[in-house]
Image (tube, rainbow, N blue to C red; front, top):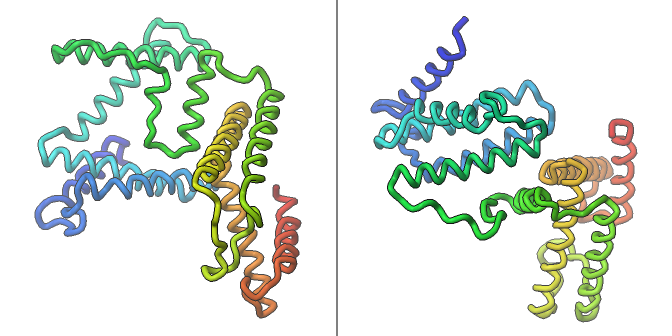
Length: 298
């Protein structure tokens, strides 16, 4: 059987062949910018396989994600920037350098200590790189939150912001404080909702033709958005406190909603109806039936 290194070299060689003259027309046309969207798609497919505990599917999804790395590295090699060996060397060196408690003499008995050391080493690396390039040392960020990217999904960004603040003690002392905050934010949102002009907030009607006319003043819309954001941020912190990934939690709920609504559609088809033709009471009855069927497995 081939060794792991041989398997990796085969994958690298295949990628090079696809990009070479006479290779795949589609692969040869790709650029760093065109591949980005696939990198994001493949990442989410990996997460979905993990959430589903689909161990048969996960190796294939991880392979698709690894393909993205090979693709970028091959394109960079063609342009003379770097090659896959540089990627592997940097990764290995970084892992050793940032784990001195494993590969060196530094002591770190808790995850918090490991993260603190990791951040300190990152700062040292940036200073060393600046000195090597003859540049002044990088200015220390005005805020410890500056290192949290604003490009990531909002739930993940909120989780990382909260984690960083909690590392220096800016946190609720217990869950009771979080639930008090949840009630407070809920009441603030309810207060703003009460300001919506008559007839007040209404459910969107069925289909485009039934969409309601929104006469909410722009200033009030902004406050509503602000309060909904505050409410979501408290929920993110509750998830953090419970060591629950809010992104995964919401994805699970989305799938649960999809599964139950598809059950409603199936039952309505058996009755010769579409959701548009059914009453809310009929759909709710099927929805509750779906929940009862799932309950033993939940």
